[in-house]
Length: 110
Figure 1 (cartoon, helix red, strand yellow):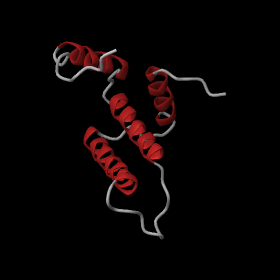
Figure 2 (cartoon, helix red, strand yellow; figure 1 turned 120 degrees about the vertical axis):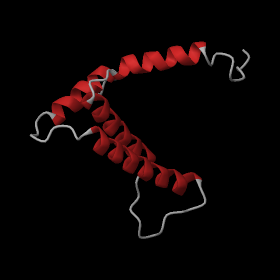
Figure 3 (tube, helix red, strand yellow; figure 1 turned 90 degrees about the vertical axis):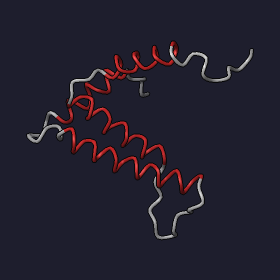
């Protein structure tokens, strides 16, 4: 049974994978291009499932989950290549949302 991984564990796992290759991480600009490419693939899948563009019968079936996984991998590579701790980045964003944007959205009443 697979146990849950922390973001730090995901970053370490990706780094161990990339570190076995001489090429290492791509440059930030190349990484951004890869992320954009993966976002396009995710967008295409979302459009097939929820939009007005169904898949052609000749197109391979891919899941949104797979495309999100690809996005996550590239995002982790990008963060690792710039020595960014994604847990810290997440905490900063959540603090921003809970302070600056705390009254921006209509809360669900309990």
